[in-house]
Length: 127
Length: 134
Image (cartoon, rainbow over all chains, first blue to last red; front, side, top):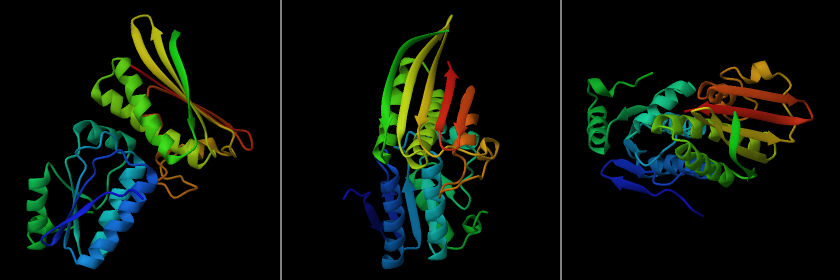
């Protein structure tokens, strides 16, 4: 069965979504990531969506769910690489991605996770 | 206004929703849409295609490339023979859902296009038509 690979880097998990996901694949990623966070005791989750040409309400909900579940498991989630056209569309769609921190790219995202783990000012959970 | 090209795609599975996104992207590019216009149309199509599969029990997407004088556009018509929608006004409100979604599908899709038209009656299925002009 197809799945999205999850990489472990130090205390963080790294996911790069490279395919246009159908709904079951998105649900599977949500389940796999939650299990991996618990298993590895990861403190950070970085999701790279730079290859995604579309984020609709289903994928948006998946990202928000992952952030909420990770939070309960004491890990912080950062979504990186959102395309400008996708951001414009998400706002018009009415999706605000509550609880999801974002960063421009993987490097900035890793910095943000490090900051959050250090309990810095940037680490406060955004509601 | 003239339909210069049309085609119909089946929508039965969540893989078909992915296929619909790709087809709509190709047609939006052919209509000369900008990247943001393409993304809005593809996102609206994704919401409606998912509704057709999940709530309508499957159906079809008809694509129409439009010409209106110098204007070019793309119309998508989603049709199913599912249970239909009893209260359309309520279904269009943000946050309304009978499933596991966010309830942004119909209302969100409407905000992403220029024209939005819905016909549905309980027991007779649902037909949603969206049009975006270049």
